[in-house]
Structures are given as structure tokens and as C-alpha cells.
Length: 215
Image 1 (tube, helix red, strand yellow):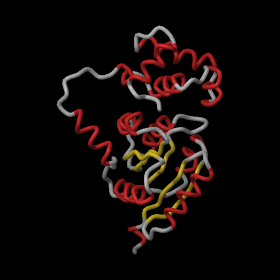
Image 2 (cartoon, rainbow, N blue to C red):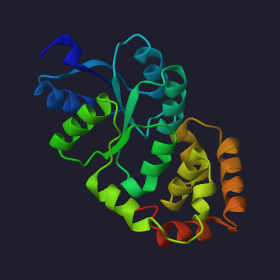
Image 3 (spheres, rainbow, N blue to C red):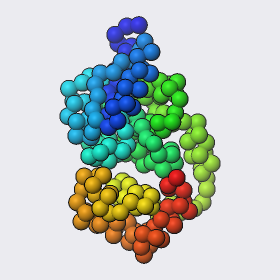
Image 4 (cartoon, rainbow, N blue to C red):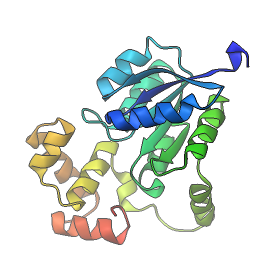
């Protein structure tokens, strides 16, 4: 295996046990090495600049910043970097949004180790990666004549606020988890209610459940 064939990977995830698990999986390969890691969005942006990675594994739910926001910032600085998003959320919730923002692929954390390695090799070679299940989901909607759902009109932060409110979290709790002010989260809530033509959080939760945006 030549040096040029090695895929250098940067891991950005706030859970140490997840980072260690990913490193253990990748340690069993000959062509993939971990070149750096970070536990939050700010460190991911700072530290990846010093690494020579070709692929970044980026958690979509970081404690200080939304993963998609981090993705957009990183792609501005290094467009050629292949970013593979990792998430606890189902693919149909965030995958398309992540791919539109510049991600090279999307994997749920429930994916098998073999799929992770396959995905890294694929995006590392310059290709995109989506699972067979998501590919089938996209194929099922090709040619359908219908308007895009209202939640597709939301910004990434508004969409995140929607799912968190629908999961039963208060504005105060959301503000704390996202490191934002209560006023800012309240503004996101107000904007998304207007965009989606809903009156209150109860209607928002009903919409989210009906459209399977939350578990």
C-alpha cells in the first residue's frame, strides 16, 4: 500500500466513546488512517486546517454548532474536502439537506462498520455516498407531481428548532443545548411557524409526527 493510497480522515464528534469506536473500526483497515479529531464545531473548523485529511466524518449534532453550519464553513475554505455526515437521525430527516449543503455522503450511526469503511473509500475517491435505503427512497419520488413539503422551506437552524420543539423540548432547553439565547430560539420558532402556516407548538408537533420528522 503506497502513501498516496492512504485516506486520511478527520473525526468531529462530541462523544469520546463514539470517536474511539470509529478509530477502532478504521484501525483495522490498511488504507484509512485517522489524521485528527475534534469534539465540537469550533475545534473542527480550527483543527482540520492543520491536518492533511481528505475525508471528514462530521456529526450533525454538535454541542456548539449545527453540523450543517460547520459543513458549509468547511466547504467554503476547502471545497475539495469530502465530508461524510454522521447522525443519529433517520436519513430521510437530514440526508437531503446535508447533501444540498455540500456533504459527500450521509450515514446513520446505526450503520454497520463495513458500510462506514465503504462510504469513506467511496467519498475519498471523489464520489458521493448514500445508502441503498436512501437511494430507493429517492427513486420512489422520481417523477411524482407534488409540491415540496413546507418543512423544506426552512433554514437548517429553523428545521433543527422544529424537530427539537416537536420532541417536547422547551425554548429554554433548546437555547441551552444549541448555545443560543432564548430570544434567538424564539425568533426561529416564530419564523418557522409563519413559513409553515401553523399557529402554535401543538400544531407544529402534530405536523412533525404526521410527516415522520421525529421518532
